[in-house]
Length: 155
Length: 89
Image (cartoon, rainbow over all chains, first blue to last red; front, side, top):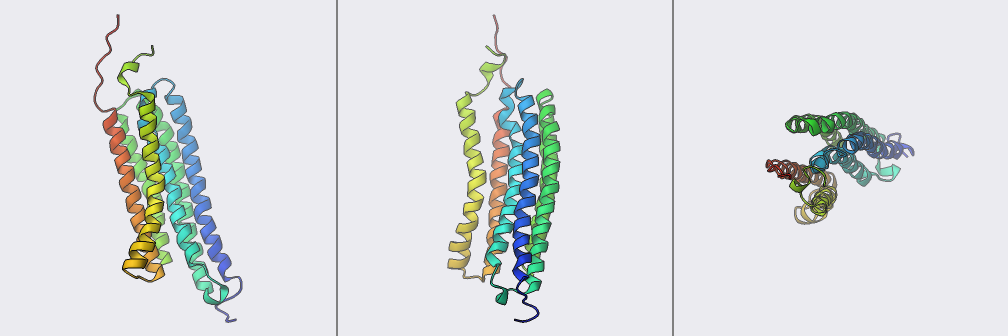
């Protein structure tokens, strides 16, 4: 077996796929839980706003879909060590970490903004547009990680 | 009766709308990834595996954002119309 194709080569690829979904799901879970407490506190007084205030939860869920897409891409490219050089393993690990930690950061941002934004929207409905904009900017952080991960993956 | 209650949609209708859009947002991108990969890019266009995966990932993400945009539009237009004040005795 060549020096470029060690037996532990796929380990890095597998860790890349795992870290993509693990860290994205961590961020998405934090975002869902944090904005969920905001929704629960807000909708006691303003239950008619539930439809609007689900948006942070949906956006946190989308972060996990980014991780899922990259994990599926990497898992589809995994092969036996003989056909899988160590270089590819490193590339896949990098791709997984890129989308994973970006998703973690974006999920934290969505959680905190969603909590405060949903509580604020109950008091002042015109805050809604601002909350959506801030949420979109938080969400785009995860999208940047996805773009870098896909770009790395095609190397 | 809770104040302002007459202005909202019935609970069941709100629930149905939210569930419908959430299902669309969760299922449609994942479905479109595999459909685009196996039917369009691998079947019709016959790209190599790496390119077909990347293109179908892009398709899935675009579909996801379209669905999210539809939900935000729906949520925004739902409660936008200013409800008439309820007459109270």
